[in-house]
Amino acid sequence: MTRSESPATGTGLSVLHALRCSGAAGPTRLANATGLGESDVESELIDLAVAGLVTYAGGDFGGWSLTDTGRAVNAERLAAELESAGARAAVKAAFDGFLVLNPELLELCTAWQIRSVDGVMTANDHGDPSYDSRVLARFVDFDRRAAVVGAELSAALPRFGRYRVRLAEALDRAVAGELKYVADDFSSYHVVWAELHEDLHATLGIPRWV
Image 1 (cartoon, rainbow, N blue to C red):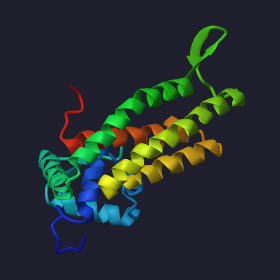
Image 2 (image 1 turned 45 degrees about the vertical axis):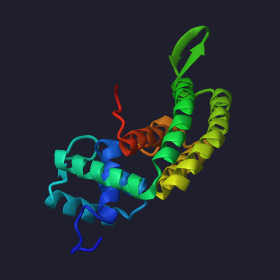
Image 3 (image 1 turned 180 degrees about the vertical axis):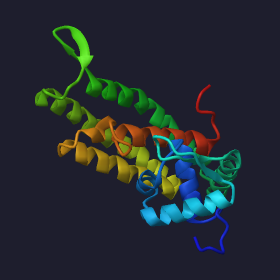
Image 4 (image 1 turned 120 degrees about the vertical axis):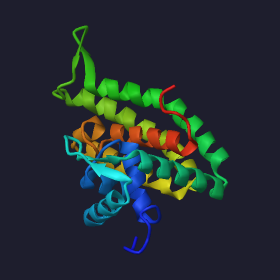
């Protein structure tokens, strides 16, 4: 986005939408979400703030979040994008596939964080590599099936392709030994999946909690 452009066009809206899906975030997390450079994200945030679409309040999550106006602008843009692409039916079908997989992902995250030891459920301290390997193998199998939904979404709206990249990167890092990328980092598989869930609701105009 150039300085002459409205922050409601171009890359400004990729940053705006990333905030919509994360709830609150800083430049590093937004750069990962959008694929933009961190300095570009910071510049976009300033433009969006001047336009009244985002606000900075500090705090543990990076401080940036949408204003009511920003949320409305983002919703309008999503509706226009969906209509222009004629993609509602395809995105809805992919969302149905996502919802089939979602309970399994939540079950896997629970298995990663809590395990049975001598019949007692306890926090997984990751001191048993064989247990972690078994759960990670289930994640790998799950991801193969999730990739099908990801491909359907990307075909409908190319911007959804970024989620596939982020999920694959998170799983690769977890399998390589960086265990926080399963569920304990803003770039973890679990967090990226949750952002995708939020994105699907926002894109289709479906309330997240009903």
